[in-house]
Length: 390
Image (tube, rainbow, N blue to C red; front, side, top):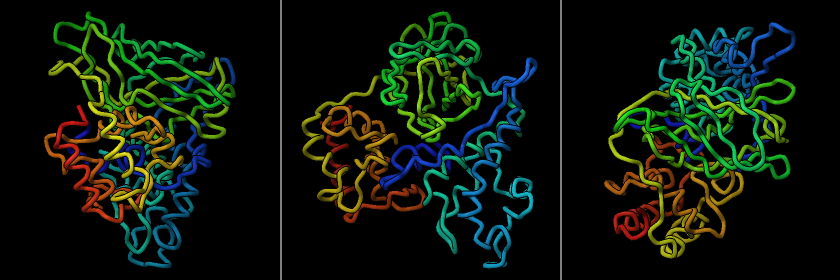
């Protein structure tokens, strides 16, 4: 897990961050339009990250100006004291010259500013995902850092294996099962294999894998919900380990759907290098699915002490956001939500704080349950009892 960060997109937007109705329509604005015309044209992997960052900003700019402009941060007419980081006619130059673009994208005031005279970015989860992805690109470009990535690879229905050797460690593979019902790409059984050749008690340090799709018209699109943004660990050599959360759905219209066999993916990481294995990761499991079904499932569907929010909604954790609520499958839901509990300090578990804790610092665009104390107590007791979660 990612510790010591003021903002984690996986938790604010893509993991326990949205228990509200979220439409994916419009996320296709997050495309990086990359032309491959001509014999000497650059491939997407060769396009300078600074150019991709600027293009990504220009795609999200209309929505950002609509939310943060409003006579405030673009003209200062409504609030003269508001910092004008979206000043026309060149909003990109304006925001680049401001304090909004930070070396650590999680520390950007753009993401961490709470409700004020205007709304917070966290209140707009789709926009927050786009802004954070853009800030990551800006940070990498400013550091003149070429992020490690696989080559583009055609995806087929059924088993797939992506060679991660081009990212810097030979022999590493990411494997998964792919399905494309109704043109929606679904990946399951996502695992990472690291060869023994990395050395004794060694593995691969993998941080924040991000999936890109190269569409057949040569446009490049990024995973709009940054599904694996909280992955940060060393995966041991000599074994195949599940890559949490183990599955992903890419359902954004136009940019990701329809997805067809033969379309290409690339996996890019913030960090990909040989590291020391401190403890062999244990695959998540659920000790008592029946107890989870009885005690905790209702709290995730707006019942009892969970009244006030419904995490099982299709546009929320019942859809493509992590941790995923799987209707009728208590065991899988238990595993998914169990990755966000802290057995050493149950009351500080993200699943507890997101729905009932102080806001900030946890931030939850899906609001709070009505009975915050009751919800926190139910989950804290279940976690500390040690009978449900491994």
